[in-house]
View 1: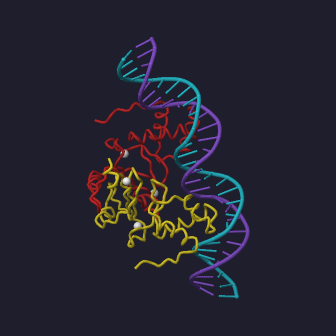
View 2: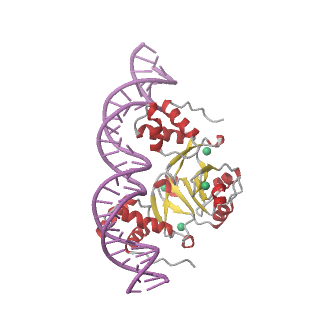
View 3: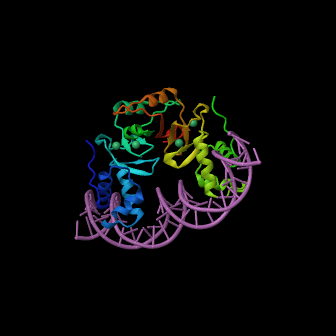
Length: 133
Length: 133
DNA sequence: TAACACTATGTAATAATATAACATTTAAAA
DNA sequence: TTTTAAATGTTATATTATTACATAGTGTTA
Ligand SMILES: [Zn+2]
Ligand SMILES: [Zn+2]
Ligand SMILES: [Zn+2]
Ligand SMILES: [Zn+2]
């Protein structure tokens, strides 16, 4: 059972926008879209994003500086994330694969270190783009 | 046998700086450090960085917006990269592990897709920082 | 209730990261 | 040589993110 986080006003506005979106959203595009709701400054957006990332409701796609809602209700820890990114249409999907996450959380490096946190981004062509080639 | 890339003047200056460094370097820190060599503008740095990433001489640490020299002579393709990042001292090491890369390059997602390119960043505490806890 | 700690908000200014546009030069290939 | 591609130089600007400071709400506890 995960801890219940009651989102604040700004957090809820911004989460709802990201959650409704079918593509990753960038901070300033979010800002533009929530100005009618009274959020006027970048910092208001970044603060909400930081919190939402921290509690695992959204993830940052590092290679794109963009944010998507978590698709995996069990990953609200937000510490072991994997995504597939289409290099043609920029479609991003979260990968929820138990075997993969187990493998990576058990991975031991040369120095014998294990890591409880990782971010993995796969790149390629999505099905749709592949068929168009 | 990899293709030999003869670096241009700016590329060589910037690669040498990154290669000598014991930590990832950020673009504007690079700019500052090469101004005495006649490189004056951000774009000159970014162009060299883009090329060096493309040919696999350096990698970008996406979560840090910083660049390190490739430690793995066989990965000049620059398409399958893994790093460990210390969240305390920010030390970054490239992970060269055949089993890991084989596992990830063979990974098949729910839709049956395989990916020939990925970037993986592990986070934790390095040995030194762990012992200080 | 009052005092306190903690979280969130509002606002302005600015820092840090990255690209667009255009002119010129150099190097490699045909 | 002619042509093509790659690299450079320069200015301006776009995009992403944080610092600093003031204020307001929320929950806890004395
Ligand atoms: Zn998730
Ligand atoms: Zn696609
Ligand atoms: Zn490498
Ligand atoms: Zn460390």
